[in-house]
Amino acid sequence: MISKILFSLFFISSIILGQSNDFNITPSRIILNITDKPATSIAVTWRTKEKTNKPEIQFARATDWKEFEDSLIIAEVKIEKFVSEKFEKFYCYSGFMKELEANTEYVYRVGGDSIW
Figure (cartoon, rainbow, N blue to C red):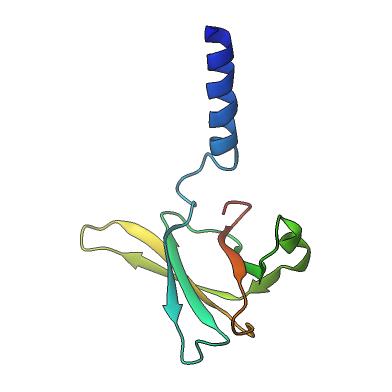
């Protein structure tokens, strides 16, 4: 019984942690922002502790499962380095999802270097 529980815990934690063991480039403070054309575009910002080499916003029309990956659109991203009042360094990213269709559900993810 204990071995089954340990295997289950190991399996679940490896799924959760398997994507990334580098929390310094894991996106945080992901925020959607209204644009001047809210029916067809939306802005997104996020930050990381360390610089992501190839930051991206990936988005697509929502599907019932993961077929959305076949029609991903990659949006351009701007990077800015900041230093806080406490001298903490972090990187901010911003970009736009454009040419959206009104009343349509979309999925998106932000990040880069295979960490979302």
